[in-house]
Image (cartoon, rainbow, N blue to C red; front, side, top):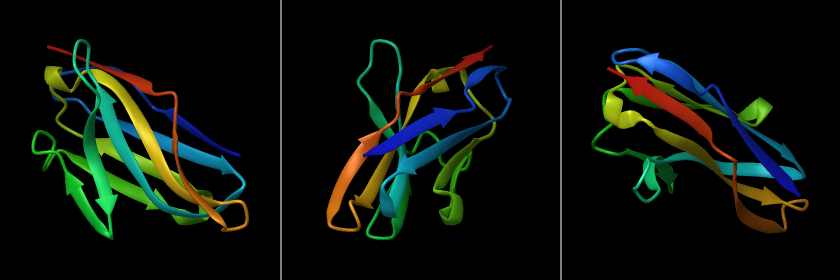
Length: 120
């Protein structure tokens, strides 16, 4: 099985920065992508940045402020968030698209989420 764990959330003031981490572990053969989503109170979960067929797409609301990166050797993903705004307040989730079971199965795995709170 594969486990995905996010970390790095916290409380910051508007204009501040946070770096979220996503650690994938278990029977991983390879990772296709590690994407980020978020769910704000009273809203549905929405994509923040996703990679599909090698193309990375950022939500319009975070373009120029958020940057995704990977450390493939460590099965880690990161989301650098700069110039945070109050409206970025949400639980942030990592979704890993993984080949596992010796490369015979491909599945998506979600982490439990990490809270980001931005105050004015």
